[in-house]
Length: 359
Image (cartoon, rainbow, N blue to C red; front, side, top):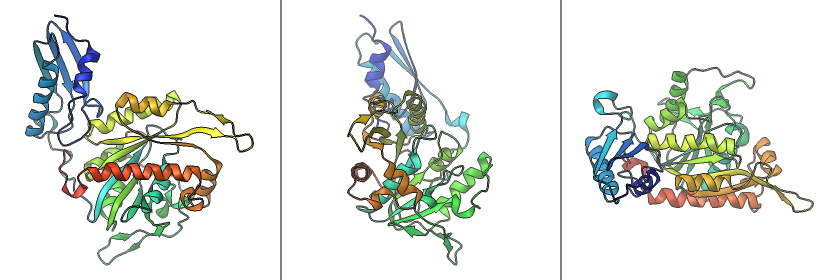
């Protein structure tokens, strides 16, 4: 009997959700290799957990799904990162933030895609329908949330030495820009960045907040790892632009969240075309359909397509996001649609306060 092709094995693995999550192990980027030969299928996984019960369940589900394929006589599953090899569990210190129900990471694989603008407008849009919203700007190399919200004051401090974030447009905000001189260069190594992430999460009085939006630096570096090691993250929103070079980098970011067992709620395609205000012609300045292709490839939703709009830039520059300045503008409605989808997805999942390390 003919053995299945590698694509057929991967298709079967898309039917295996990671224990405790709705996403499958292929979408989460946990399948690192598939080999088919002589009636045997070898599957290499990086599950991102050392919990024996979760790993055993995962192996059993993979063996069941792949073993049911025609021509398969044996299935061998190789799990990377055994407890003996990895040492101390890097998620051991993870704990929910008091008073915070859902933590939403806003990330991108590369800079220049408008991630911080999406994070700011998402937070404002969430404030219309959620029970308390905060925005923590840990994009420490390019902090911009304070400017986008028109904030020039620093957080105050309680007697217990906890920071109270200033609020604007219904959102409580903390950004590294509040603690730097305007022209101060930011030259920090990884441990300092990770320490700042920890402080902005645990030393700030965020509650009560149904949503805490985290604006991450571009890429897959120390700040991202520190976030998922510090707190249970409900899910990530990944921002891209339509062109292929952006999609390549963003795809790595999606896979990275999979390797740290963090669900990706979906993709936002920013700068998705420009409509000429004079003639109404739409031009795909950065290509078209990239967000759809990325979402399809990883099996995740396309949450929103945000067009290029000068009013978005103008609102951010003067500290009044477009979702506040022009709430009925088509772009504002797109951000509100994004917020509604994030709320719906998050509320279907267990709150951060009740989720374990693996989901």
